[in-house]
Image (cartoon, rainbow, N blue to C red; front, side, top):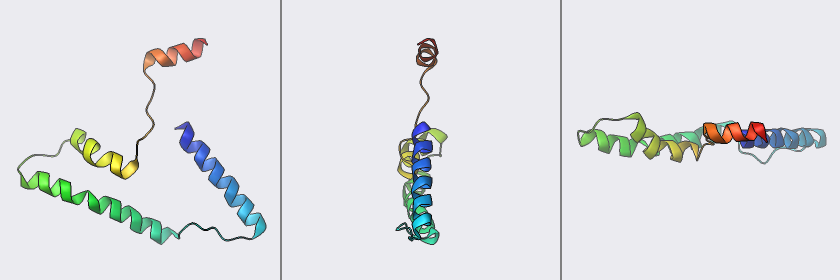
Length: 90
């Protein structure tokens, strides 16, 4: 999660610099980003439909494995309790 916050902070800093320089951001408009989200989500309809057509049900585990990483990338995970405990003592 820390990496995502650092990325957001860096983006905000660059945005402020662009604003101070009166430069337009090279990022695509929001409508284009929504279209990209639609493409990613739409790609997942095919494997879901195939699974349903074969008579198999949908499970949360299957959805996470087959669709989750494609849509959201590899999300950060929590360290196990032991590692977390070791960090506090160090």
